[in-house]
Length: 181
Image 1 (spheres, rainbow, N blue to C red):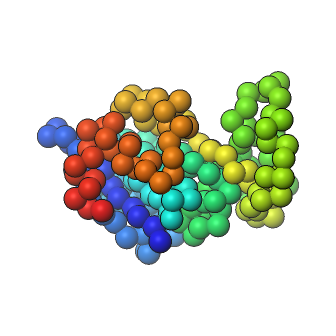
Image 2: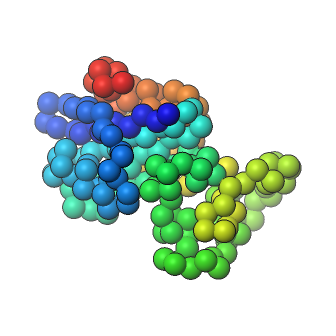
C-alpha cells in the first residue's frame, strides 16, 4: 500500500491533492504531473510505501526535479520507488550495468570515514537494481527541503512511519496534507 500527495506552494500557502501513480511510469511522467499542479511555484511530490520508505520529489518551475529517497533498497522493491531511483540518483551512466556503486556515498559516511556499522549481516539484505547491490541507505538530495525548514540532519532522522506528516508539519502544511490522506 502506498500514499502519494502533491503539495503545491502558492501565494496563499500550501495546497494539497492526493494523486494516483498508476499511470506514472517514469520520472518525467511524475514531473509532468507535478507541473500540472503549478507551473511556476514549488511542488513537492510526497510518496510513502507501507512505512518502509518515503520519497520526496521537488519541482521548481522548469528546473530539473530534485529527489530524495529514505531507503534505496526498500524503494528498489517498489514499482513507485523504481521511478525515483534513476541512474543519475544511483550514480550510474544511463544504461551502464557496470557502474561502481562502491564509489557512491549510499551509506551516509563521508570519504575516509570508517563504516564499521554497515559491515554486518545487513549487507546480505541489500536489494539489486539492474543486477547491482543497492544499500538500505538514503540517496538523493539531502538538502531538498532545507530552504523550506527541514534541514539535512532532520530529514535523515525521520522515521518512515510518520515522515510525510513531520515534513508537512515543518512546512506548515500538516492540515492540508491530512485532508487528502
